[in-house]
Image (cartoon, rainbow, N blue to C red; front, side):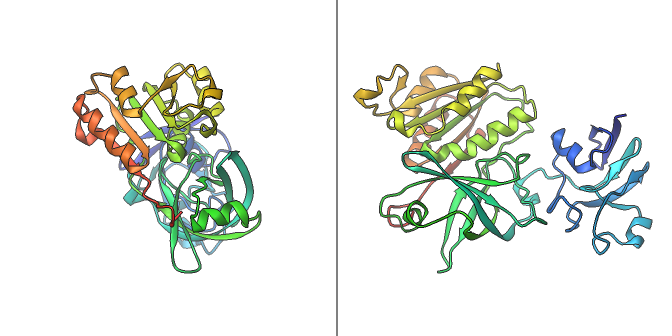
Length: 339
């Protein structure tokens, strides 16, 4: 039997199914409660039961003491409602609300996504999860003290593995390592989540996503998150690459377009090869976008890719009516000797 859960002080309500944890139900319904391990070990999701009864579930006694239970505390990743309940906790609404962690990860799988793009699937320790907002990134911490930043391509609800999409930068120290000597089961240290490029869900405006190359990674996270939570806002993805072979995961947005009436996918090639026999759109992303949307006054735009593309897109969109505060961007700033 479903149970209604009310969050205070926000007053938000959602429904939890029988034997569904409070945290799982909240995340399923689109409410971001803080969490860390999701298995009753860390205490990040601890909150107060203001009214109603819960099954406290399985947890480590040092994480939730008898005294805390007597005071009304519970671990929302372990507890499930036995009826309608009211809880008290903070909600994650912005990047500042998410805990930044330094964690070890193991490379679970390496998958060649395209001729020059490697997909990495990183597994966290069994008692850890990384809570993040769709669109954020992590830093890989290197032994020499340097770090490399990569966007998370998976949506927050799909957190079994952290997914990265890494393009090979010729002469780049780190990406040369990824494509030549890195292997599955290697251990990496990461820090995250980081960045203010994340999906703003407090708006009902239609969204234009603009991705250049592997700038698609955080955009994939955002769109997957939006579709999972049934956001009914109109969404259009423009994904720009040089040639057809650089469009390394077109099947994913193509499938989204088939399955969701409010999503449109428009790939754009700037220099298609003759052998591509490309029937689609060509040219610069910013030119294509403003041709399709000459009045952007009622939109939000999210852009990720090389700085020149991001800057040109921002200028073109603002010139066509987009409010400056409705343009959100993450510009990749690596150089050939840095990648």
